[in-house]
Length: 292
Image 1: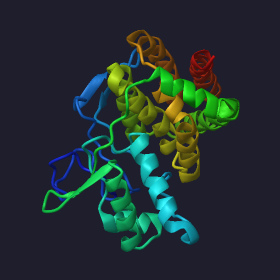
Image 2: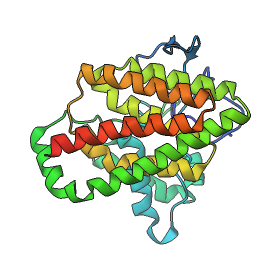
Image 3: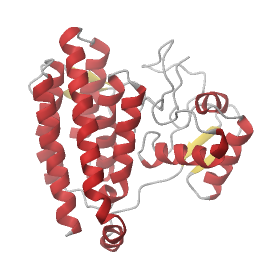
């Protein structure tokens, strides 16, 4: 059964536009403020509709029993901090989360209680209840960036290399799949994520940029690759969040995002790798510049 976190106020049993009958664990399909049908992707002649929910399978993979509580907290925090379940949206039901993580519902409830005390989520009872995200990304802070630079600076090159390897590989793999068998639903999701990130306001850009990049790994159908992409993003997440997002930067990267999508949809694996590499090199230069 496909699972989705539903937007605040939606009933767990209420159908959504993107609900399917089978598939992986997914987070909420609605991105607050996004239209049901996004703008046309530049030069594509296609229009993007609201995407399916975010696939959580790669992030919420089974935990090791010896550290079940700690790893459950880590998995849920990753989902929250990457914005895979957005502020105000609901996690999938407890029984489904527990099954996905391979843990008891008691262990899951202990992890949820810990994250509730820390202010990341809140639990509500009743027909419209569930576990809702309350965490919001803090505003960029120059002092925080300096602290991160001192603490994480020596790991930056390693993290950037890891991200380059997994994300270019994901784009290569997905383009290869499109070259063999075009996927109308995958096209729809990819164009919708593109429309969202390229139309984002600075305050929500990082979250929507994350969803855009991770959906490429998800659409390959490889849970291991999707998990690697999420891991690579998480290693840079705090640094990226500490850097101000400027409208000019959004406009500049929009063309790079469009080039990535165009290459994937054309089934051109080499062009997809090149487009992702050029885009990530720009992000790397930005990070190095702010870190001094």
